[in-house]
Image (tube, rainbow, N blue to C red):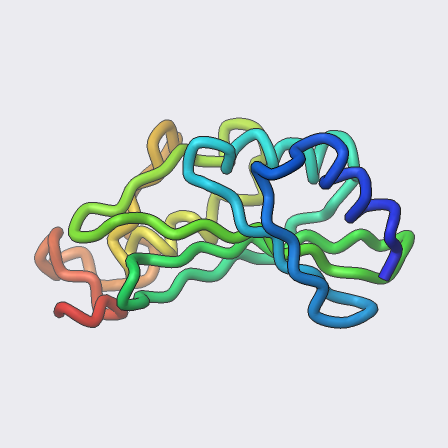
Length: 142
């Protein structure tokens, strides 16, 4: 793995990030909800990361979000991870800063019920519009 991106994250954020280097091409960076947006924007605006996708999963500890950034010049992926509290998970939306997050945040809202604060179009995107608003099929409690 290009140690430069990882070292830059450690230098910039210190103990506000917990970095796990999975292998030479993938690292996981765990951050608090409060530091989430600052780290995401840093990955895009400073490190030149390209948001390839975002994923969410319902865990016993809450709803986990991972935003996957490709650093094309180094052929690596840096995954930024945080966990949101249930039953009403919410966090600031990346979409107003980086439009590529629009579709995937809407999908995560639709299936996991994560409210992305500040999202410009927080409608369901894939499920039926007659489905109850509080039903999110990928939540374990559904």
